[in-house]
Amino acid sequence: VVYMAGLLGSSRSDLTVPWQKVLLNQAHDIMGGDHIDEVFTDAIDNYKQSKSVVDSYAYHHLSTLTNQIDTSGVGTPIVVFNQLSWRRSDVVEVTVGNSDPAIREFDLQDPDAKNIPFQMAAERCDDGSIRNAKITFIADDVPPLGYTTYRLIPSDNPTKIETQVSSNHA
Image (cartoon, rainbow, N blue to C red; front, side):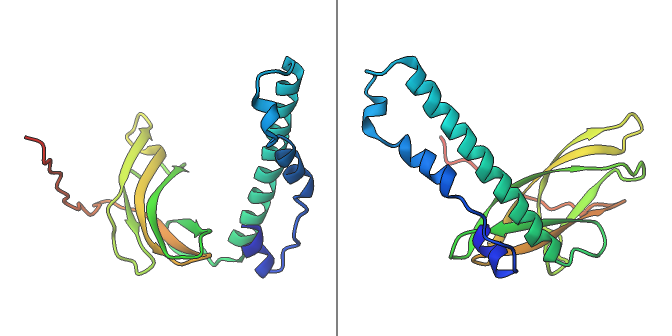
């Protein structure tokens, strides 16, 4: 993420201190069980601090990246990043909030505006509108070190995509 954000002009953040804390805890003798509790507490605290710093950097750089992406258009954009150096298809799960009382169903579209299958677990208001929805789908063929933008589109008549489940069990 830091690398991709750097390509867009974001400054590279210094991750030296959290990395050094992680490396400090990699010594094999820390897990030998022959230390006092404070040693293990310090190791856990160092990991927590390092994770907090790295999570903050990742959030900042993902924000830098998403601010560069044109997400204008109908519906809610869902930007899927691939941090690997090869094309990737994988399961994506995202929670989307909604405040429009008219929205009761969605379609999910790929970058070519083609409806794709997805699962939705929705928390609904008393009137049947969607308050929050957990959307799960397969992001197909996301480019290496890149992203793909999907769109969650409100729909009065959502596309039903038939799927079949089979079992080879006797």
